[in-house]
Amino acid sequence: MSNERLCPEHYLLRLRAAEFPPTLAGQFVQLQCRRLGEQDPAREVPWPAAGPPRLTQAELAGREPFLRRPFSLAGRRDTPAGVELDLIYRTVGTGTHWLAEVVRPGQRLSVLGPLGNGFAVRADKPRAALIGGGVGIPPMIYLAETLARAGKQSVAFHGARTAALLPVAVAGDAVSPAGRPTPCVEPFARADVPSVVATDDGSLGFAGMVSRAFESWLDAERLDPSSLAVYSCGPEPMMRAVAELCLTRGIDCQLCMERHMACGMGTCQSCVVKIRDDTPQGWSFKLCCTDGPVFEAGRIVWA
Ligand SMILES: Cc1cc2nc3c(=O)[nH]c(=O)nc-3n(C[C@H](O)[C@H](O)[C@H](O)COP(=O)(O)OP(=O)(O)OC[C@H]3O[C@@H](n4cnc5c(N)ncnc54)[C@H](O)[C@@H]3O)c2cc1C
Ligand code: FES
View 1 (tube, rainbow, N blue to C red):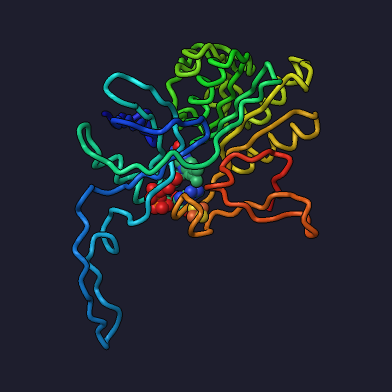
View 2: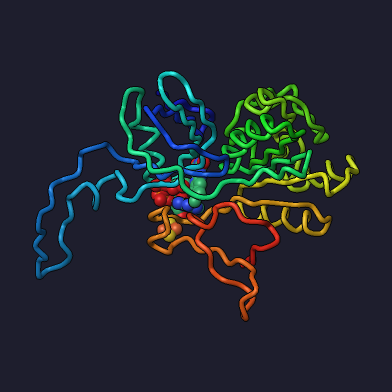
């Protein structure tokens, strides 16, 4: 439907499918970042004595990657014309640059999903804090809508290195530098979820890590820890800081983990996460794509 630039490095890709299975916030899709039906026919390539063969097939040598790329669902709408899915992506390499440069309205893409488990909305927790960093913010948009429908009172924390890298529309003059929640981030304000913006370089909102902004909010609110559920997605050091804070204070916390994923459906074993359990060694490898990507914070064994 559209492929709109949100900031220098982020794009909002809106897809429409005639049908799509039910989805949950925290689930993801594997998107083929290449034109449909443009694979070269199979052919043999001679291996010259002088050195490696010159590969020319698009899937080996082209700028359209062979493997699909995982992206979290940032939103879903069921309309009479079909199911609309939102993905927000950051341009980091071959596949995401291809998406930004090539994909235009009307183009057909291959989407595999929904994949993974998604966040479990805690029925016994009336309050929620959503903590997203960088490309961990998109799944929080979908989660904010889900939690609003479930009647939870939520607040969202958004972290980025600098203001220009926030992948959401922010009303700059409504952001509180002291880290107080305000309706300053458009997709969250629509779901009645006030937001705190934190930037590492202090260019907008709270100056410092988003986990610190969350900690000062917790200190100011003095709420009963058993009433709160925390949901987080973003860079691993950020999620680890959030997890440790929640564990220390007895707050329920779920993390949406990220790994390099080749297949996205439990086949290639490339996406392991160490999860604490009652085996003799105390942990097992779980697959981020099928057992996760959402795990309880207290079960993750950090590297
Ligand atoms: C479950 C899941 C959900 C994700 N959701 C989003 C999302 O909503 N929006 C978004 O922008 N990105 C998301 N990502 C990350 C996204 O999949 C990668 O940025 C993307 O695959 C990069 O593809 P590329 O071809 O552009 O980069 P490549 O050319 O393959 O690599 C470029 C650089 O990005 C790094 N990279 C590639 N894939 C990953 C990865 N999976 N994790 C960490 N670093 C990676 C590489 O190491 C390399 O440094 C998600 C990843 C996972 C596993
Ligand atoms: S990505 Fe292949 S097993 Fe998880």
